[in-house]
Length: 143
Length: 209
Image (tube, rainbow over all chains, first blue to last red; front, side, top):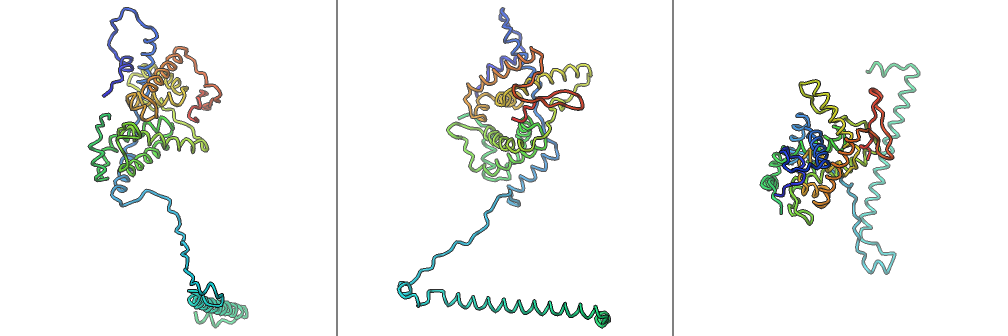
């Protein structure tokens, strides 16, 4: 272990036996002593220390995670091999064309069904509003 | 390779992260104190302390006491993490400056009021002298006197040689001594002074560095 002998001498309280007093060293020793008294170690609050200890234990136990930025997963396009024959004759269907066609057709039917349902809902709402405006209280009596 | 008294505790924590607690208990005050001297804000010091120990816990499996080309102890490694965290906090704080704490006022007074006044005045003067030092010299003094690190350890934290650290500390003490001898309170060159409206005292804005 290396010892910082230079600064230890400056901070030493033992009296010097050297006849000639080095005034500069004395001033430096005084400054060092003052700095030593001024620079104390501050302690955190007990509450903070215990709270951080608990958090470190939780992280160590794997029960909680330190916040990390996770990139949103983006699907990587997978290249589809194309048969040489299809490349030669553009009229021939490519692999997956049939599946894509049926999926497209299904999406079309779903959209159409949704549009019809929305239209029926709107129509019912308009009809109810008109009857109420005419003073038709059958709906209130039903409620 | 320097002797590292923490090696058994580090090895235990590597095997079982739940054994990190003794290392944390040993160094939490040191890291907090270092952060408080650097930021002069106890909220920022608490945040930095939390960051340092979370990073240390995560990076412990990668900690190599052989260091980066030079032998390193767990303590100096922890303070290097703190130094980097403080540098990041400084960049953030430049955008959102806050009023610093008067740390000298936080040091407890003795039961003797008269002696307390004299002591407080001396400490205050020493604080002002230390505050006027360049950042590296001030940091070296804090690590030497508040954290009681050796010149070698300070060199490992600051990324300097042991000899350079000794020169740094000597020059810092010389500057403090000259400042105290002169008994003046002049602001550093190029830095505007902050005025305390309550007391009318002026304070140097060294924390903005």
